Length: 93
Image (tube, rainbow, N blue to C red; front, side, top):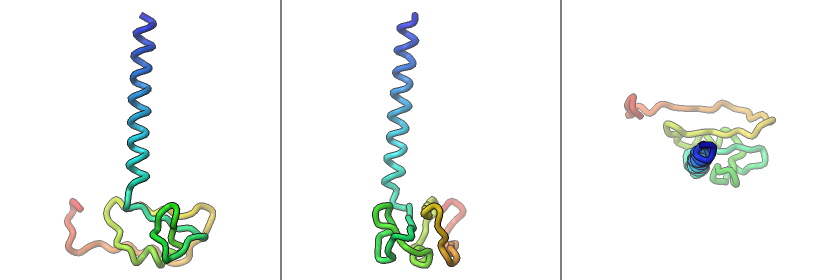
């Protein structure tokens, strides 16, 4: 009976690890994430490896529902973050 319990828990742990890996991978590939860093450059793409430098640059992007903005911790970014609602959108968007 102890072997069944160990096998049962092992398969569940493996399933959880696979699900976490898939979730983490899909989040990393999410194209709607924008990164801002003091060491960035506003000519960059706004990715983790090539972040924007200013919020002003981010404001030129059209954010979509679900877009995520990552600000470098421990730093201050001057200026407002402007999020505009699309007048042609629906409640579902």
